[in-house]
Each structure stands twice: as C-alpha cells, then as structure tokens.
Length: 187
Image 1 (cartoon, one colour):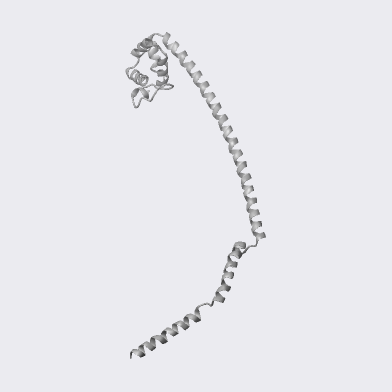
Image 2 (tube, helix red, strand yellow):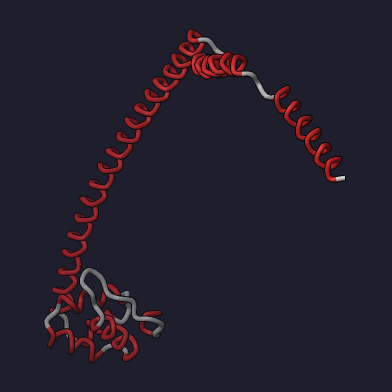
C-alpha cells in the first residue's frame, strides 16, 4: 500500500513538473522579450499622448504665445494700477493740503472768538456761550486765560457749564472728546 501511495505522489510531481516546463518561458524567448521592453519606454518618451515631435513643438509654441500675450496684458494692467495709485496719491496730498488750510482758518476764527468773548463782560459772554455749540465753546474756553474762562463759566447755565467743564477735562488735542449722554451735550 505504501508503494501505491509513493507511486501516486511521484506521478503527481511529474505532472506538475511537466506543466511548469510547458508554461515557463524558455531562455531564448526570455532574451527576445527584454529588448522589446526597453524599446517601448523609449517610444513612450518620444511620443507621449500619441503626438510626434513637430506637433509637440507647435503646442509649446502656441502656449508660449499665449503666455506672452497674457504677460503683456498683465503689464498693461500694472501700468493702469500704477497710474491710479499716482492719482490717488495726488488726491490725498490735495486733501491734506485742504485740511491743513481748514485747520488754520478754523484756528484763526477760534482765536478771533477768544478775543471777542474775552473782551466782553462775563455775564454777556455767558449768555452768548449758552447758545454756542458745545465743541465750539470748548475750543473758545481752551484759548482763554483761566480767570476769564472761570468768570464766564460762573454766569452760564449750570448744566451747560458742567458739560463744557467735562469736555475741557477730557480734551485730547485737536478736538474735544465726546461727553457721553449729558444734558449739556444735547443742547
């Protein structure tokens, strides 16, 4: 029985060896496949996407022309932007000049008002100051000497005087700071 099993195994092994030899490529056939494999990548490199060299050059030339045209458009746009920036800078300079002129004229007017109110009697000046805009009144009081401003404030309506005093305390340089929701700032 062991001999029959052994003989069966040998026959099966021989069948596998035969199948292997029939399927396995021969060295001559394997040698022929290697050069063909090397030629295929070279053909792919030379002709990607199925185009020949002259077609590829034409495509590259067209792309280069489009890029040059786009570059020219961008340069033209850049020049337009530079021109607009220059005009905006000119407008900014003109606005700054006008603003400086306005501040000068406004300052001169405030100085003139300071002289007028300082030369008046405190009661009469207070009656007029009660009707002035709070911001203007603050500017006028800032230009006055302390004793004159104090005497005028003493004759003013208490609520208006308190609002002006509050603004004078919180004054920050070119304009009076907002005084919040007080009755004086509403008048």
